[in-house]
Each structure stands twice: as C-alpha cells, then as structure tokens.
Image (cartoon, rainbow, N blue to C red; front, side, top):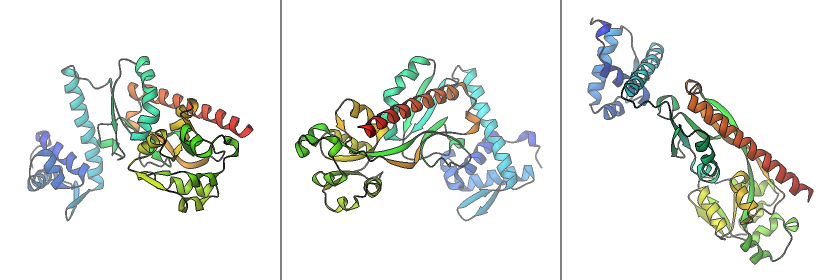
Length: 317
C-alpha cells in the first residue's frame, strides 16, 4: 500500500467531482479524462484508504457512509487550497458576493433596491445570476439563493422574505377604455369577462387559483387569453395595455402607486408559498453574507409593512 502522504491531489479533485455528479462519466467530462480513468483513480485511492468511497450501480454511483464523511472533508480542504492560492495572488473572494435569484424577483423587486446596498457597502462586489433552476449550494460557487417555495429546503437555512399575495392588475388606460368611469370599489371579478387574461407558463395556476378564491372560476371559460413564457412578460404586457395579469402585489406595488396600473379588486389571494433567503450554514458567517442578509431582510420587512398599510386602507374605503 502506498503511503497516504503520497495521495495525489488530482485524484482528490476527481473523487470530489464524481461525488458531486454521482456519475463517473460526467466527472470525467469535467476533469477532461475518460470515465474509465475516473474509475481507476477512485479504485487506487480506495486501495490506499482501505475503504470504499462509492457504491457502484450501473451508470450512477453513490457514496458509502465512510465516503460521505471523507468527501465532505476533501471538499473543505480543496476550498481552503483555492482560497489560500487566491489570497496569495491578491485574488481573495472574501469581498465577492455570488447570488442566484429568480428572474422576475430580480427585475421586479431586487434590482430597484440593490443600489442602496451598493452605496452602503461599496467594498462588496456583486455577482448576480438569474435562473429558474435551483443549485446544490454546498457544491456551487453561490453564497446564497433567493428561492420560491414553502420554506422547506433540505440541509439549507431558509428565512422568509415575504409571502405571495396575488391580485389582478391592468393598465389604467385599458381599464377606462373598457369600463369607463366605473369606480374601482364597484368592480367585481365578473367584470374580467370583458378583458383579455394574460397567463404565464411559469405560473400556470395563478389565474385559476385567484378566480377560484374569488368565487368566479367561470370567467376562465368566458374570456380571451394570451400566454407568455414568464411571469415577467405577462406583467410587462399588462403595463402595455394588453389585458389583466394576476401578479404578486409586491412586484407591482410601484406601478400601482405611480398609477400606471390599477388593482381594482378587494380580493387578495394569500399564498402559503413565498420567497426565501436560502444559504448553507457554512456561508452564514461570512461578512458579505451577513450584511446582505441583514439588508435584504430589512427591505422585505419594509415592503410588507407598506403593503399591509395600503391593503388596510383599501379595505376601509
């Protein structure tokens, strides 16, 4: 048996890649070697360690209990090596905050507020990725994500920003073209029959959910519809006067306040799902993550207070 002090660093990188992908072929593609070469490297390391790292089964592989512990420590060690190398060459990532955000959340809520974070913390360099996909944060380059869901994200710390609150919106111009000077307080869900409904492929149940909550499910069969590939596009279409979109009120609040859009219905459909600040425990101690979390949670709380006040005022009208 070769001495453990002679373990090859490349072998550790290959094992970490195989563990992350649960597949020798994909690990080989990432490391620019064949799947057979991956298997040979793994077997050689297992012989040195005298325990199995992986359970083989067809194309997929899984970690043994000993392998889980070992790979976790290897991953931490590799990260420290990379960090040490970057610090030695003046490329420390301690000031670089990498976040993944849902596209509509980014465009409609986060980006208008982000300049205030940049002004408060100019030393933190932001790298923002927008995607509907979720990532395995422990194995990714991201420090955190903003995710939509019920708050149950295994092995991750999740803090609620705000819950979804659905309400239909349309342009003020279109509203008056169709309903004239009808007071907003007199508008009922049945009036939606006179408008085109704007749907989204990423929020397919929103109209059905809201209309069912409002007791007007029949409206879906009585109206014209236009379908878009994202919620964001349906909101832009509403602003352009194409019809009614059903939207999270937090996303559209600034347009409603500026009177570009109207939200005429007293029916606001609360959702059990919402948007969450999500991060692995290992990232929460980093200064950049702590500061961003404090900032975004405060902004979310302010948004919720503003919405509560506005909705309370509408109910009293």
